[in-house]
Amino acid sequence: MTKQLSYLLAFVKFTHIMDFMIMMPLGPQLERIWEITAQEFGLLVAAYTFSAGIVGLLGSFFMDRFDRKHALLFLYTGFLIGTFACAISNTYEMLLIARCGTGAFGGLLGATVLSIVGDLTPLEKRSETMGVIMAAFSAASVFGVPFGLFLANQFGWQSPFIFLGVVGIPVLFTSIKMMPNVQGHISKAQQNPMMLFSEMIVKRNALTAHVFIVLLMLGQFSVITFIAPYMVSNVGFTEGELAYIYLAGGFVTFFSSPWFGKLADKHGQFKFFVAVTLLSLIPLWIITNLPKMNLYAVIVITSFMFILISGRIIPAMTMITSSVRPERRGGFMSINSAIQQLGAGTASYVAGVIVVKTASGEYQDYDLVGYLAITASIIAILIASRLRAVS
Image 1 (tube, helix red, strand yellow):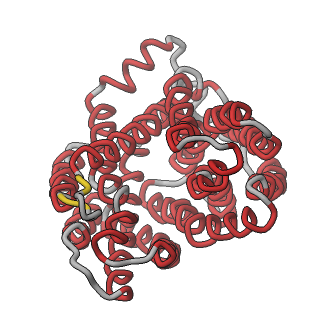
Image 2: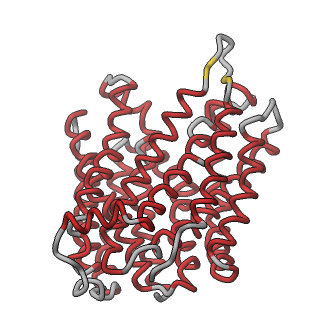
């Protein structure tokens, strides 16, 4: 895969991730404008994830029957239409439906991007490309969300969606021109959908990959979910200072992700994953046991955590995309992406069950969440050792 093509896929991923992330900080505006409850807003956020997960499972039946280029163009077009639909929504119900539609296309879109990386990049270079793609997450954090909030504050909550739709149009046309046809998997695909589904769920290597991604989500989203309230209630941050954590984390991982991808290719995906995962246990423990501390010291610690947890995802996703034959990769990644989102949601819910807010307003038992994340991360290493590359 050429550098230009990997950057194009990163742009696709950037718009997809920013569309998902920008919804969460829009909560105060939407609750005020439409007089909706926190639970109703929570449903707006969850609608994207639930829709992406359900359609991701359904997509496993047919994703490998099509040219990857055609699938990408179709899904990205639907994603942009859904984004514009969000921008023109003038009621809560319309926005809820639009978010469901955007999530339906967006969930399969993410899986298709990873499938293209797996199909067009040799295994020995795959982590480097994956690092470029994963840098899109960082770009969405350090640029996308702050800029989207600026637009929302200046021009209304619809403006970030208009911006994303407008930016996505040249990305779509560039994809039409630059993206090669990816058809090598089609002729080998079996036609029995239930057999395919069973193979992508029950077969040992596939099942190992799905358990692996759930453990990774449990090993990071359980901690990430409560970073913001813990920093405010226990460590002494103001709400305004929270942005510095995510800006710094996004900035450093934007540069570290491609570099980590090259290191994973050089030293081997599994060995690199083990090394980075073991290092990540240190900031995971420190963050969940922080006393009141200086702002800058905390930002350094959280930035190291973001560097290391994003660094371990790169070889992990390389191993997952390599654990299935090319003719099964599209459907398999659709299922794995759906399970990944389910795992992230489960991690957040479990953390919410463990953490207790005391009468004084501080959060208690966040350290237990840290131990849970550390345990899940260690088990993930053991599970990863059983994952075999077949492509």
